[in-house]
Image (cartoon, rainbow, N blue to C red; front, side):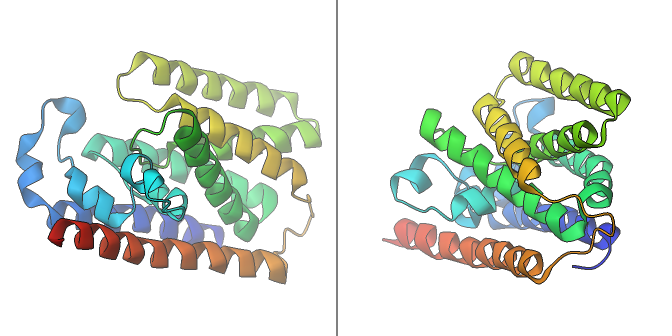
Amino acid sequence: MGGRLDLFNLIAGACVTLYALALLLQPEAIFQAGGLMSILSPGGRALWQLGMTGGLAWDQGWWWTIFTAMYLHGSLLHIVFNVMWIRNLGPGVAEAYGPGRAFLLFNIAGAGSFLASNVMSGVPTIGASGSIFGLLAALIVYGRRRGSSVMTQQLWQWAIILGVFGFIMPGINNWAHGGGFAAGWIAAQLMPLDDDRQDSSWVLLASLGFIAIAVVGVGMSFVRVTGILLG
């Protein structure tokens, strides 16, 4: 999977690329912003085409959207905020668990976050925040397993602050945040802590599998939604 910088450049690059593509697919939506939080917001049609989950996608049984929606974002502030957290937390998770396992944790947490959201609320949803909560959980688990109380206390503070922020700000999917944290916690408990942090062949294969699902999933969503629009 390469070095940790390459890994999280890949994640951030995928988020930025799909955000730009969403703007290009429905440019008229750019000028419909209703405030600071919705500056440069992609349109709903474009987000459905690229793999938004919940709502229509969940009703239609498009299971793959729980693996694609984590790479989509709904505004300029949304993507800037999430990419910042990915770049801040990601290298630490890669250092703790290895780059391949860090990638698995990101995807497992993201999928878990959207599964929780779809089951509990079913609202259309996107964003990497569930994965970010999963990365936080993974670092807390690592600190606990290594006996670092200072590290875990600081991370718990971040998690609580982000959680409170989610309840204060409108339009935040708290089911996704909770689901991502829980999925990241459980997955991290199952991850071995090898001192050499070398990723095994199964980790690399699983990582490639997640990439394949995301890429093919975006294509499937585009074909399905475009077919509905044209039909």
